[in-house]
Every structure is written in structure tokens, then in C-alpha cells.
Length: 394
Image (tube, rainbow, N blue to C red):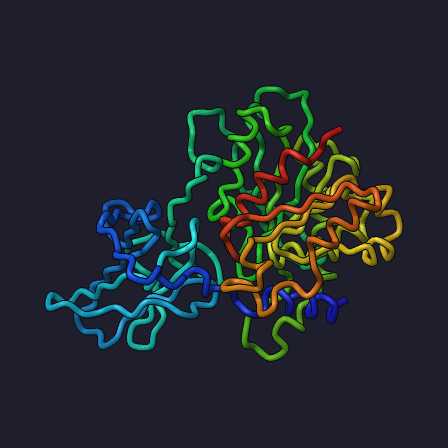
């Protein structure tokens, strides 16, 4: 199991996909000077800024520094070299427009790694990174609207297997507190490599996506549970790396500890047909390793930039054909092209063909592609919006 997990991760996660987030500018296209502060800036801070074309502009006050660079994306590869002005401030504009949506970044100042004091921080790349939001044309589906809102609350649950108290965040839909008799299905939604249980609500806006879908009558209300998907402290570059991560301990935490706790403390529909598991990137791999081996627990499976389900996979999972009500697989279009933000060559197995093969074989298989995005949160926001209405359709 340990080697299988490492092999899966090597196809999609081991090479941090960041280049699409610093796309080359169109030749001869001037930068429009309509820059505005990013929506993720700390109160009163004017930088970083974004313009209508998707360029990002940065300004860092570091009068004694000798070199300042902004590194965008998971892993911090690539970036924008800033230029020092006479007043000691360093400024620079990205070489090209960035993909729509959320991006991590950090500063490199004289060789040291720092966060931008102008913006909020988000947990990614196994550390708190700065964040910038490039306005998206379809941002309405995760916008804060005047609709009934659900609640995201932190829970601490006992984990005898790890001898710790572990944390999860639980989204309960609008109206949960008012109707004490109603019970709800549950989606267990996992984050990606280097992130934690805060990612789906902070970077992904999962709660707002659900609020808006529910208000529009497009999805059945359900609970979402988000927990930390690691049980050992594995970091990139350390001896053993990803190969030292073993899925079995987290499977014990999820299946034997977290699910019973949630069913005991929230008004859930606790049978198999009202429980789903999905995840982005590493969380998708975890879903593929755990859910098919626990089909008495999960009826809906979602892999978001996290691998594919082939007919051979289904043959190796007894009961999958009869027990799984939905297999949902999604990617950003750039990942499928093996282009600027996907791993070299793209996915090793054609996920589109696999999804169609499952569909031809009579399984409920859905394949979704996010246009013009790579291995990034705009892909996963759109994927959740597409997947949620398909869950728990009794």
C-alpha cells in the first residue's frame, strides 16, 4: 500500500505545477494600467494589485535588501524579479497574465523566504503562504451573496490510533440548526499535498459554493467534513519523501474514528448510500485508495485532479459496479494537455477515455474539465460546483 501511494503521487503531485500561473504575455500587448488591490489583501493594504488582464503587481518595502523576488505557485518555482526604487520600495509586474482564481506565492529576500505583509496567508506547500486572487469571469458561483448561509465549525475528535486529538472542519447547510428532525448526507472532502483541513473553506470557498447551489435549488443540502489527510510528518526533500507516507493510518482515522464521531455528533444519514468521499490532488489519491476498499461506507467517489478510475480498477474492486452510485473525475484543461501547469506528459492513463469506458459499461461515470486552468484551486472550485448536484440523488 505504501509503494502504491507513492507511485500514484509521482504521476500528479511530485512535480509542483506552477508554470501556468506565470503565463507568457501576448506579444506586443500592452499592460492595461487599471490595477486594483487584490481581494485577499489585508485591510488598508494597496499591494499586491491585479488588473483586468490578469497581471499581478507587487510592491515590497525593504530598503536594505539587495534582491527581492516573488515566487508564485506551489513550490515557489518561477516568479517575478522586483526592482528597487529610490525610496527603498521594490516593485514589479508579472511577466504575463495569471490564470483566473487563487494562487499561492511568497517572497525571496536576499535568499530568505518570507510572506508578503500586504496580503492574507493560506496553508499550502506545507507552510503558510501568501495568497492572491485573480478575478474570474465565473466567480459568481462562489461569491458572497445575500442568501441563507451554512456554518463551518471546528471540531476536535479523539483518535486512539494516533494517540491524539485531531481536528476537522464541518460545513452544515443553511437551516441545519432550525429543523432538529432533518438528517443529512455527508461528503468527506480531502485537501491536497502540502495543505490542511482549512484549504477547502479558505482557498476553495466550499461553503459559499454550497450556499449558492442550495439557494438556487441546484443541489440537495448535505454536510461536508474536511480533515487533515496526513498521519505522519512527511515533507518534500526529506529522506524517504512521499514514499514514506503510508495510507493505512489515515484510513483508520477516517473510517474507524472520524466517521463514527461525525455520525454521533451531527444529524447524519449514516448509511452507505448517503456518504461520499472526494478530494483534490493527493486527496483524490487518498479517496481512490480508501473508498473502493470500504464500499460498505461510501457510495459516491470523486477524484479532482487526483487520478482516474479505469475498467481494470473496477474489476479489482469487488462490489464497485453495484454499490457505487457515481464516479466523478475532473481535471483542469491544462493538465490534460500536459501543458504549462500539468506534470510532464499529463496523466499517464487517459482519464477521459477511462470515464467513457465506465459509462459505456453501464456505470454512472461523469468527467468534468475546467477550461483554461491547471493544477490549481479554480479547477477544484469548478469541480465541486459540478459534482455537488450529482451527489445523493436518491
